[in-house]
Image (tube, rainbow, N blue to C red):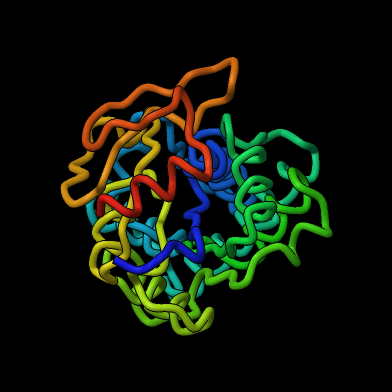
Length: 254
């Protein structure tokens, strides 16, 4: 195993609880704008998260949960327009500071940078969503902290295929065993493991029942000095919360 050089973060559900409190709300507002009576409650949205990507999620909803929907026109155009409207609502939520980063995220990113390691992002959400989240939580200057922001439709296939992580590795010029991924979902783990990158998980309410086979360890969150994290499964750690040294230890055990 080579030395850890870069930590790659997923975004939705990993950096912040964006799915329940952000994307879901934004989708519902986009539906209202379009005159549609669709409502994605928390339970339904949890089921829709089986599919990654916003446009793909709308199509999944129509195919599997609302197959009797009739539309006069091009359904692809409808999906594209709904997703564009949803993105505007999501960015507006972020700009109003409605969504905060998860415990330990700010601290750990700062520690990673101070240790001289690289930081990158690999996500299925759009670049606009990533940029808005970073600006609203870390500040505009933080966009320069990331060696690569791999997002959205930049690759042909979204998670669980490994395309987005393969692309990220290519952009930062590192091999898989020089990196470590932080993910929150089964699809994310399938994607990162598919790229042969060691992975740890911080699950959330939507992903607590996911299958994280292949991950080194699964935690409830990253933790803080006054807010210990809990090990759900996998390799134990030598501290009460996730630090750079813990990341190095877990990477070495992969």
